[in-house]
Image 1 (tube, rainbow, N blue to C red):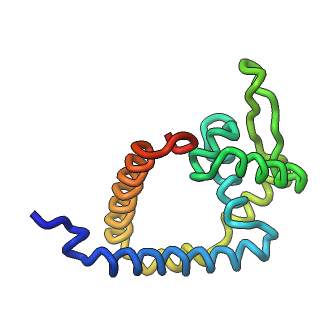
Image 2 (image 1 turned 90 degrees about the horizontal axis):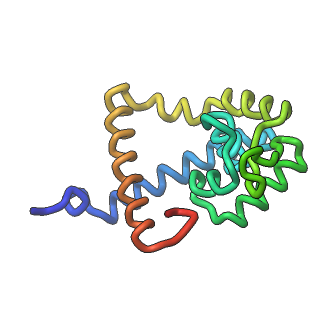
Length: 156
């Protein structure tokens, strides 16, 4: 039985997916630049704000698909900018937790008002949006499985 990837044409699918991703990234970067934020900083603000409890740098490493040392460097820069604060975990002294500062909370609120991506996504009907999201979640799960089978932390 032929896979759906083969039916769609792997090269065409991958190229179109990649172009859509990077074009949307460029739109978001342009808007975030006006707020003095980068894409990765906006992602950190999102994950810190929406996590059930303050995440650790290791948590962020896994969520962002970045190496731990890269995340530590990023958090250091964001801390110097006054966007986040690192605090020792009271139960695990060798672990730090990341929280947003008041300036970080304000940046999170401002970046949520960026409308370029919402405008692009509005091209999809609600049904298309749900179908696309379900497909992307399926692809993400499979990609993570592939990473886990061949790579160690931070992906495992």
